[in-house]
Length: 355
Ligand code: ATP
Image 1 (cartoon, rainbow, N blue to C red):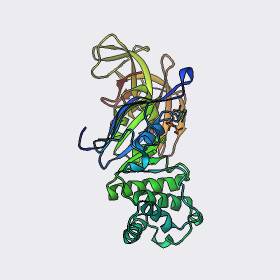
Image 2 (spheres, protein in one colour; image 1 turned 180 degrees about the horizontal axis):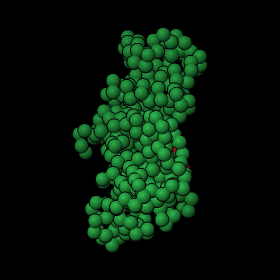
Image 3 (tube, rainbow, N blue to C red; image 1 turned 90 degrees about the horizontal axis):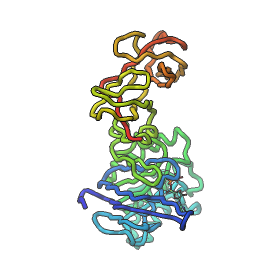
Image 4 (cartoon, protein in one colour; image 1 turned 120 degrees about the horizontal axis):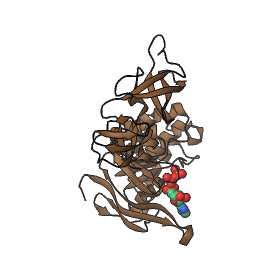
């Protein structure tokens, strides 16, 4: 156990049901979450992220494997004995209590002295900027304000780890963006380790120190937003985070040969293998038809997005590739459907990914 880790899951398996109906929600997941980091579990619905969160909270026991908190084995410790708190999507506030009473509730349950309950509640009200609402019933608050109360209540007992299960998904887009910034601020100010669950890749990219990408009960990749975006380890990660073009090719000295006969430069490959080459739409450059070493293509569609245009092109064998081009601030890019041109890649852009 590394002393820098707040939470560690070791070889955790969680199976639900029996025999043929058995579902492996977690299939041998190991992860290390560092102290004081904003760590996000990201993946599509059903990939097992909530199950992993529930194992850390103690609401579920693993079928096998170990959960450690601050170096201690807590696998079978009851939830109320763990220095961990959870914020759910449904805020689970008490509607008949005031904002201050909701925040104080958890502290009173822990038998904290009245003076400490009062001072911590005031501190938490200031932290989430709800001092003016202290006496209001939570049923009279907006969704965003209720979310702040839920966060303040969960942070009040100063847990070592705060678990957040899709806490922003009930908010509209504008409020969600505001709360993303707010959550990151709360995490930085309190220094508490946050483990955040979401299926929203943009949310994960903007808030997290590190992200664990999950699919089908497995952790696919752990890294910073930049690591994961620029160096996805496999096809799933490359397609779940951002947009990606995939081409099938055969490796040879100096690159990967496409079915069209064109060569793409890729590093570190063994010749003679069938591989999948991945590259992002913004890494494709369009150049004049006939340029030496560029891949001939024809524009099949142009989709305008304001700041940029998605240019769909077909290679000579019909394979489609999307290029994202920044729109010029004046005039237009002078592209038209049916136009022939050629593709190039930024150096190091194309890479081989596992299927
Ligand atoms: P979502 O974003 O939809 O909540 P998730 O990634 O959090 O998805 P989990 O809720 O962890 O996924 O579920 C993972 C798998 O385990 C799913 O196939 C789910 O149906 C199954 N599962 C979860 N809890 C149970 C349970 N109590 N009994 C049976 N199957 C379960």
